[in-house]
Amino acid sequence: MGIFDALNTAVGGLQSQSFALQNISGNIANASTTGYKGIDTSFEDLIPDATTPSRQVAGGVTAFAQATITTQGTVSTTTVGTNMAINGDGFFNVQKSTGTVDNVPQFSGVTDYTRRGDFQVNANGNLVNGAGYFLMGVAVDPKTGNPLGNVPKVLQFQNNFIPAQTTTSINYAANLPSTPTTATSATSTAGTINALGGLNPHDFSVNPMPTSTPATPAGDNTITGTAANQVGPAGPITTSTVLSGAVNGLASPFAGGDTMTVNGTVIHFVNTGSTAGTTAAGVTPINVDISDTVGTLLGKIDAITGTTAASTITGGAITLHTGTAGNLSVASSNSTAFSALGFSGTVTQSLTPPLTAGTGTVIANDQQTFLNESISGGALTAYDSTGTAVNLQLRWAKTDSAALGGTHTNTWSLFYQADPNATGTQVAWVNAGTNFTFGAAGALTSPATPSITIPNVTVGNQSLGNLAFSIPSGALTQYASTGGTATINAVTQNGYAAGQLQSVAINNNGIVVGTFSNGQNLDLASVSLSHFNGTNYLKALDGGAYAVTEQSGPAILGASGTISGSSLEGSNTDIASEFTKLIVTQQAYSANTKVITTANSMVQDLLNVLR
Image (cartoon, rainbow, N blue to C red; front, side, top):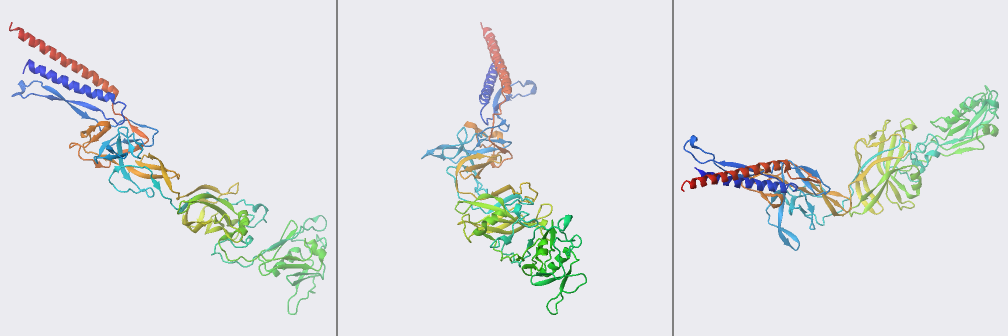
């Protein structure tokens, strides 16, 4: 050991500091490089061997590169949908093109790894980053989203084409008004289903209710006379008005001997205490004492017609019922007294005709009636098996209302338009075949299942087959609505026409999502990540890529890191830190040069001894 050893040690110091300066220079130069991982310098002392510690001297130095691959760079957002950044552990699997054949890139099959995520789609539909590395991943089925294999391959999305998908289900959410406003509701008789905004099957030539609805017998019908007044200032007649007119009576009172014929049965008006009524042999006569009231008379009439709904007087106007046993015919021998009740001549009214068996369809001849007694339920574009668009119109009809009292419930039927060009007896609208019933609070009580099947849906000549009509929990309600119309909150379907790929983007789950010409956004591929046991022992390649080494260990598919779409990871270089290192390196380098000049001076002094 001596002066010459000091010279050699100082030279080693200069070399090591030069090595450090080169790393600092490279780190500063790549301060803005996407995904760049800085290289630190590690110094190692070289101690010469000595027999005893007391004779040991400080040795030389050598420098080694120390990778910082595991140090995260800052992630920032971009406006490019195919840019990606990895948060945490992991690398993108990439390959470098070895050349092109017929404008198609060729690959050696060797996979490299990078954190540089500035990928963009090239002319061949590959995702290539700024350093020319091609992204790898696993393709997925665009309809199911299931992976098509598990080995990453170079991704390509050129001219991707998806076939049409038939509509098989509809998701629906709406509020139906508790009292619908229809074209007929404002002019309908109070207390009827029409007045409550509903649909009356008796208004149709063909019963539009489902086949399961049985034909009903003839129903009660009514006829109302004109408002009649009592004698003097007493006002309109009431059920308490006396028939004889002696006290607060009719303007033209009934007298003993008058008769009234109801459906062929004679009612005799008799003086008080008289039993002068005559009928056929063996039949008890029907007598009404002229001192009785109009209410008594109406009771006799109701008994003959057999109606369960009592005749009423409102504002002096009498309403008579046909009952269900036959048509109504009422005449009186005292025409003036009959007129005083608000009727003239012979009163006739037919039963409500019986309903025919339900077909569940609305024919074209009844279409206007149907439109007048129902409300719009929205519309959607569905698709048949060829991808042809089908305009599916929906309407709701309230077929029963709890406001009618008794056992009536709030019940609705859903219809869809089967043929917009139907005429005559051709089917224009079809009942979905399910009664939708709501409780008093407006919640759906039936059907209990959230989905029904509408069978064999056909619009014009376009067949959609069976459609699942799905209603999320609580999504179909019947609350009050000031407009009396349905409020459609959602109406979607799962079909689409065929489409061609227009663009791709990568979401935060690392899924490549394609946007197609038919408006669909479908999953096309999953970006693969890999990790290593010895990450910092990877071999750095040009362009921010890394190759596997023996010290790094093989690539392990999968990583704990997550992908952020439309983002980039910046360089992990800290400029302030590098400048500090630069100062220290410069001083160390200068100090080593001083050692050399000092050693040189000492050698010169030694040489001067020989003179």
